[in-house]
Length: 62
Image (cartoon, rainbow, N blue to C red; front, top):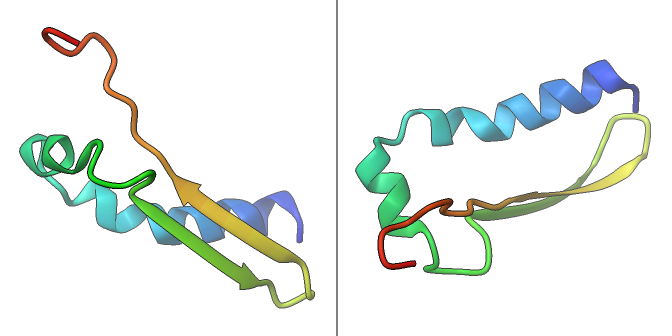
């Protein structure tokens, strides 16, 4: 899998998070260990795992 394929795969999975409002994203921080975890195999047979994490930087009282 080359860099272009990796970027396309990542973009495909990030698109839904870009539709979330700040409030929706903030609500989900800390609910699970990550927002999403996906495992798969690319067309060339390369196995991959994508894990989407969000960290709250400078949270009030945090």
